[in-house]
Image 1 (tube, rainbow, N blue to C red):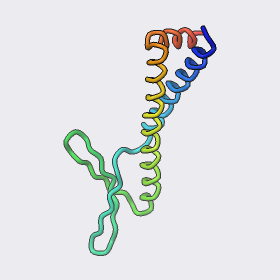
Image 2: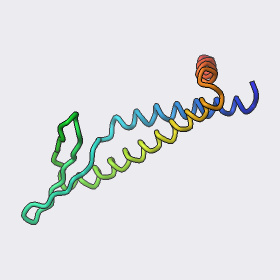
Image 3: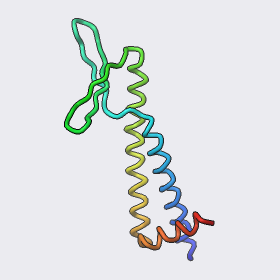
Image 4: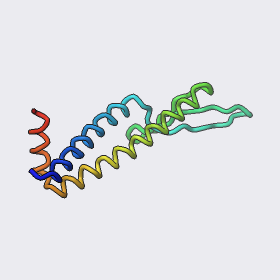
Length: 111
């Protein structure tokens, strides 16, 4: 195996591991968006998400709203990171051949 193939396989494995780690972190983060609603001069926050065809709204306290906003922004960043890692995986599979990459990665991981 050439040095280039070895480097690409290492990058492939790193990307696959990154995707798995990111997906695990995503499970702990809320889905949806934070909606701010003003009623009679008071502001109320709701976490809204879609489940099937329904939109589910959950009240979020004023104190919890900034932390919820941070979690939602983190989720958005992680989703983008997954897209980048998946693009890397596809590029490596295209460069070396999908069967070659997956076969070699399995052999390397069993060592």
